[in-house]
Length: 320
Image (tube, rainbow, N blue to C red):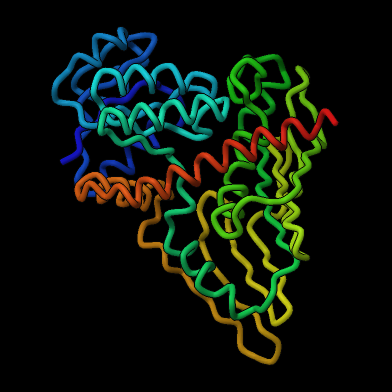
């Protein structure tokens, strides 16, 4: 049984709690928030407002960092120094250097630290990877995450919402386009050239929509678009010389995969075993931890480091 302590009380917390109640092998033993009222509303037995005090507990296996983007590094480091493994929400950290430091600290102390990212753990994603050779050389990938956030109108009306602030590194690129990037980088690795353009800005200058272009220099380009201010098509489309693959659903949960080849009946795959998008990753983290599978942990670390490097490259490309 993996015993979890949570820091944070935001919108992702009830979703993760539901997933941890669905996947066998998890028990949430404590939570820490800025106010006892907010932290106490989840029904978790031990409630704290002092993070350092919670970290003194000896019955914690993992600390789950569920805080706004810029607040990941400090609490994750504190947890590692206190001897606890860490599950940290995406995006992992603000900088490549912070990410490297956390991974190095975890290794030094023989601990695990994972980035909580759902889609690269889904059976439907593994199926896409398996099917790609059947469509021949792929020249173009479209990845779209377009959703009119239910908090967008409140933000435009003046509400202070972390996901729409510069202070917490919100915006479309880091908050939702990261799902598109995780898939592309997991399949194709480091791109030769990248460029990012914010296509719309919110009232405080935050990028509420934008497009990332990843050029692989071998005749393959991936275009990843994301918007928090408008609905639109979403999913993935892989265009190859011998066919195409279409992935339905938001990029954080592939709901259906279609293999489309000329002259053949379209093959449809729906392999995800859980309806809840966060469950499959929890199975993987649980199994890696139980087996002390360092090779699997290092493979996930490499993906997170590549994501961090690519995010920074994309952000820097806007200033050229």
